[in-house]
Image 1 (tube, rainbow, N blue to C red):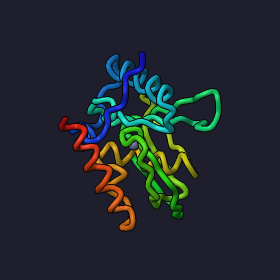
Image 2: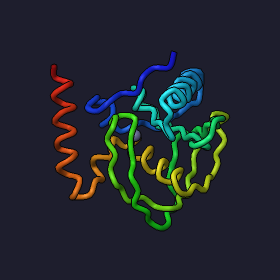
Image 3: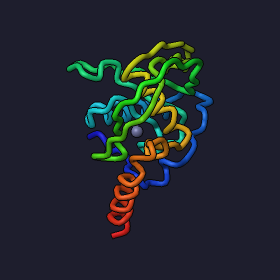
Image 4: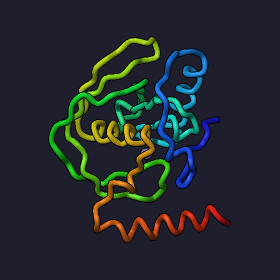
Length: 169
Ligand SMILES: [Zn+2]
């Protein structure tokens, strides 16, 4: 069974992840779990700290609106280039039912390693560029509520208050 994604305010979500030194069994099984979870939760992407790992890894669903899923595994990713800007509504598996308008680049060039320890460069646009920036943020402990426009501040305050209230009880 796929495990569930950690929800805000889980402390792991605020922790900066650590680059992977050796891609071994633990990384293989982590990535398996992440893929299973992303598919089960219908996500476009997932960062390792969302399932409680401190590895600097995120995955993307290459065909977010299609039946068959193809996962892109990004280990120790770096953004090489960003272009343009687009403001769109964005959600996060760690913030159920919260959608915020966030400005992200239209195009992103990313470099990372795959599970075979090979480096690759990927050009992403639209929703996958957005997801890439969203997951890169996760790896640094940054969350979508940190990006929100001033007009959303009140809504976020209400949401986090309710979430924290629930977490305490
Ligand atoms: Zn997220």
